[in-house]
Image (cartoon, rainbow, N blue to C red):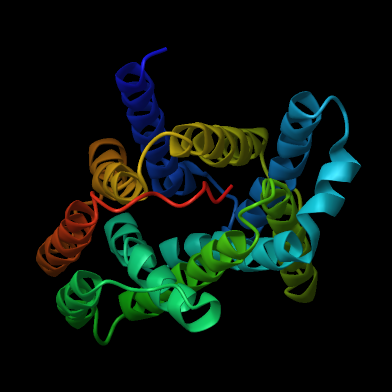
Length: 297
């Protein structure tokens, strides 16, 4: 395959990953009776066997060896990713899909700061400038939610973004290894957190078969296939383009919620989100000439 054809295929895979990921908010909305903790529990639980199967197929059954090779960084990364899994679903209980996804779109900036502080990675002047612009967008979004439950949802969304950024930094620190086991650990931690919450709150584990199907679709389709497509595409697509193309998640997520469940974003959400997305896109475009780092997963 030529370099051009390989790049086009990689871009398509990253775009597809964004589409898979963008369905998360809609799928949570489509659950009939399962509450947030039940969704987190079963989605996390179903992720584990799926990715163990993927690891087994990739490595001729040497799953335990790959998990050991990934080491403590994968465990730490999985811990933070489970926090992102959990806070994402809890945030959707308090605010709109658009709010949560726009807040999550700040992850590249948060990860850049984390990489600078913990790994000594350089941050371009353009990135600092776009962070300032993006913070204005976040302020506009938050201002529209002051005084309501939406503010709590925005805060949970921001915690999810922080957790995912920490996960990203953990992956970068172990980028010479296959860090796919980190997602397996995230499934383990997420199911433990949610299961403990259900027990402490006196909640039930039993949910309708339809809701179990929704959780399995999220685990295998949204997270699993999305991750596989992104990982494959990241091998040939430059890092700046990865961030730009994967914004399809943020763009399409609110559209699915609007088309299927008639969830219309607030004006402030659209204005602030547009400012934030513009800042992220500008940051990615100005970084196109930079060489991509090795793939994170």
